[in-house]
Amino acid sequence: MSNPTVQLSASRETALRLQRRRRFRMNIPLLVMFSPILVYFILFKYVPMGGLIIAFKQYNLADGILGSPWTGLDNFRLLFNSPMMVTIIKNTFVISILSVLVSFPFPILLAILLNEVRGMVYKRTIQTLVYLPHFLNWVIIGSFVVLIFAQEQGVINKIISALGGEKIQFLYNKSTWLGVFLGSGIWKEAGFGAIIYLAALGNIDPSLYESSSIDGANKLRQMWHITIPGIAPVIILMLILSMEHVMDVGFDQIYVLKNPMVGDIANVISVWSYEVGLGRGQFSITTALGFFQSLVGLVLVLTANKIARKFGQGLW
Image 1 (cartoon, rainbow, N blue to C red):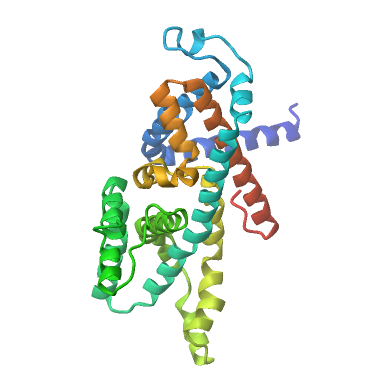
Image 2 (cartoon, helix red, strand yellow):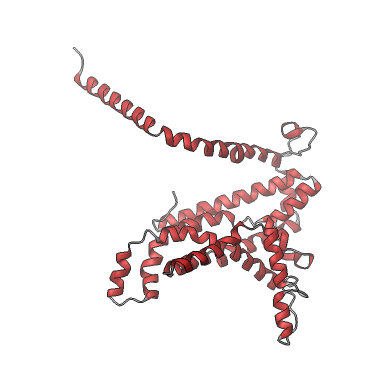
């Protein structure tokens, strides 16, 4: 005679198995749609990670990645014993932190202002104008920056001269160059970054604004007590993701805008890796630096997420 408990357990397992099969069949279209993305990440994101091995080797083209001799941590010791490397890491860290601190609020502010615009034609026109710079290459953006801030032919200096003032070396003075660098980054990306916050603003219940208006709240109070709390999870999410780039200054922007007069602050990891890695063929050292840069970025993202979790807003 069979045991009733065993029969019940077997029937539950059968039901669960059937449920899994049914769920799998229902999700087949989604899995098929997801497969190209999975292949993309495997081929272009995870497979290249194998190249990190050359950070621990004396890589040469003749022997290849696997045949090159091991050097252990010598490449890392060589990097961090160089006084120049300390300056490069410091420049990267300072510019990245300034970029995050200065640039991060602008997409939020822009999204809130766009959300308050009621004329659809005017709103669409503004949105198009602020999104457009994102699709332009940094070479084009750099040309605009030079046309605006050049010492002799720049628009700003022509206006200053017409008003009787002395021309300013915007692109050759370290402090003004840094301002131009940060400003050009905001101009290029703030509009596109506002899309995410506009989507978040669309999820706020309009009845909250109506109720606050009846209670006499003006726009600033509505913004402070309804809008900002309503998009706070998205703001924290974007802040955590931005920590990934704290040690990663974009190569294109800084390479287009740098010049020898500002080399003391414009010499960052991405530019140094390009000049030394590709220019001089020292792939192992630049890979070691990139490995260190990625580890720092990972630690910062994990730290930011841990802090956010303490306030109930963690990413995972």
